[in-house]
Amino acid sequence: MIRVVHYGLGPIGASIARVAAARQDVELVGGIEVDPAKVGRDLGEVIGLDHPLAVRVAADAAATLEATRPDVVIHATGSHLAQVAPQLREAIDAGAFVVSTCEELSYPFETSAEVAADLDRLARERQVALVGTGINPGFAMDTLPLALTAVSQRVELVHVHRRQDAALRRLPLQRKVGAGLTVAQFEERVRDGSVRHVGLPESVYALAHGLGWQIERLEDQIEPVLATEETHSADIVVAPGQVLGVRQVARGIVNGRAAIVLELEMYLGAENPRDHIAVEGVPRIDVSVNEGTHGDLATAAILVNAIPSVLRAEPGLRVMEELPLVHYRG
Image (cartoon, rainbow, N blue to C red):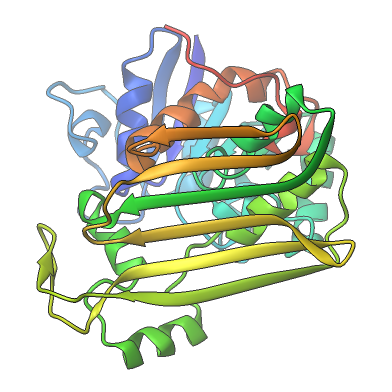
């Protein structure tokens, strides 16, 4: 039985914990959360199960890790590596393997090289592995396209176009893509970094690393998708002229040309959602996931499915391509 502590019990953290609670090879032994409304309550109640788990949610991470001695910590507290690195160090220092939703952890060696080196060193010393994963980044726009090149004799260009209807996603994500803002508000929040999809540059670097390419320059373009008629989700009403969401394109320049192009559209009411992957080369590969990979449901699954693989990985800070194949097991 794999002993697991869940670090972070917001909407995504709770959904991951529900998936883990249903697995026969996983035992939930602890929950860590700073929200005072959740601290002290039973973990099963906090994550929305209809039965208790006889595990109390606590705010003191160090005490919880010391008392429970988990094999794995599932970490789901934030997107930015600099902010969550102390939490990751705490889990590693407790001797736990770590699977994290932190987008910037998925490939931090270019954008956060110093922090990445420190985490890698500590994990090697403690003989554990950690990985950042999810659906985007972690699968749909990096690991899956890379896996498709297994049948390639030559690859010249990888183009991934992911379109998601943000109205079907949780409210924090709708806010993150700018739904309901004016154009001026959108542009201001792009400048301060609060509106964007975190992790798209990391997906470019992860793909390039797997393909053996050196990125000379990375271009990251963000623009709003505007409403032409009143559009709404369960939580937000968007008037004509306001922002429905975001279109973000990241291009990895290799040998003077865009060799990796990742295009993400995430906005309320997006029609024909899908993940489309085109690998130009020999042979040409063209694959579509109709309706797209459901970001929230699939994120919860991949974090849990990655546990056996990260436990078999070499110690250190790992990226998805370095893990034994991550897949569902009943």
